[in-house]
Image (cartoon, rainbow, N blue to C red; front, side):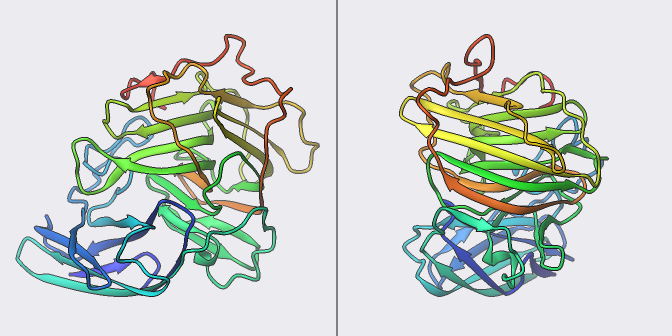
Length: 364
């Protein structure tokens, strides 16, 4: 039995999100794993969820695997070590993580990794148009789900295939209203549920009942593109958590938009987290053409009940669900405020009603 880590035994993290995530996989073990745990800087042992089920022909395009990990672990043996960026055991500079797993035969394997922690968040504006100066993708961001690679020769960040199921790479600092612009290329559209593109990620929350891994997605505004029906915007709190307070607002039906594989596109993606409510809007267009003057998708929380939770800050990240690799480049991020005269929501019926408690029409 071995414990493999997605980014090896020496990693680096910077304060970009509420939690630090270290992804890996228990390999060549007799499943199920009977015990698994981790320790930060030789502190107390903590429970670690290791995926027990084999992914046998799950129809990820129309449903999900029936597992406590929901969308976070697809393959047997996958795990996510995660702990707060404000954990009292965490210190600036060098830290260590010890991971232990015991398989069904009682065989125990241990893996120790070192990582550098920088508690200073990146500052805005953030200009990542030149990626060639970075030595590692971990200098640019943190993978929360999936694996991402830096290609300095092509000056792109690429999701590592197969993308399964969610992939998220957080780049920006926690902030309020922001705008991201970037270029994206879809290398293959077959087998993808969402081709991307990005999310203002506000964290993950525990599932109910608890299961040792955070599964509830909190989004201050996602830009998602499906090769089947088009574009959507999402706002959500605790999506997939089973928490009674869970909610999501989504463009439904999708806005049609044809995507061509290997064509370069530009994206402008904005979110507003303001006392009067949250808004997200975005547009995508072929890079060789002029930017359109309208938003492809726009949603807000005007119809959300006031007693439901809302995120207070979010970090820009690259997002994909399923499919082959896609490439992001020319990334820029800045703080912004929507002008007072800029009226929310192009939906002719006004603010969209939220979906509550996993009550979702269709397969989105």
